[in-house]
View (tube, helix red, strand yellow):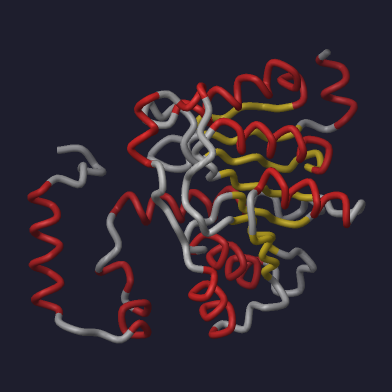
Amino acid sequence: MPRFPDATADHHRRMHALSEATGPQSVHETAQQYPLYAEEYVLARFVMIADLLRSTLEVPGNVAELGSWRGANVVHMAKLLRVFDAHSPKRVHCFESFAGLHDFDEHDGSAAEQFRGTHQGSKEHLLAVIEAFDLGREIVIHDGDLVETLPRALAESAGLRFSFVYLDLDLHRATAVALARLHDRLNPGGLFVLDEYGWDELPGETHAVHEFLAEHGDDYDMRYLRATRQPTLALRKRNGPEAENRR
C-alpha cells in the first residue's frame, strides 16, 4: 500500500464514517488534536514547508506565497515565524485573487481544464482567521490578479526583498511572471518553492520553471523534494560570486 494512498471512494467513505462517529466539534477542539484527523500527505506537506522555511531564517528578506487559495499556508508560515524567530521583522505577503483558476494558456494543456474555476478562496474568512490569531501586522494581502498586483507591489516598494517564496499558482502565465519578476528580489540563499512542478495534470508550472532556468539556471541549485506530493521542487539562489564563477 502506498504511504500516501490516493483519495479513493473507499477512503472518502472511511473519512465520512469517522466524521459521523466524531460528531460536531468546535474549531478549537479539532485544531488542538489535528494529527488525529490530518491525512499523511497533509502532514508531509506542512512538515516539508516548515523545514524549507527554517533553512532560510538567516537569509534577509520577507516571505511570500503566490496563490494561497484559502490561506492555510500563509497563516502556517506566519505562525512558524513566531515559533522559529519571535522577534523577526519578516512579514508574509499573500498574493491571491480569490477568484479561482482562470488564466490558462497553451502551455497548460487540456488536462488542466478540469481545474478551471476551482480553488476559489474567501478573503473574508482569511481575514477573520488573521484577526483571531492577531496576525494583522505579520500578513500582507495583495488582492487581485497576480499579473497586476505583483508588479504594482514591487514598484511601490523598491526595497521589498524576499528570503522565501512559495509558488502555488498551478498555471503557466502566472508562474512565469512571478519567477521573472522576483528573480532580482530573491536574496542569495533564498528559496523559490514550487507546489506542482512535474505534475502531468498541471504542466504549465513545469514549463514556466524550465523557461526560467533556461535563462537563470546558473543562479540556482535545484532540489527535488522527496516524501511529499506537494511541494515538489526547491530552487535555492546561489551567492553572487559563486553564481558568477559558474557562468
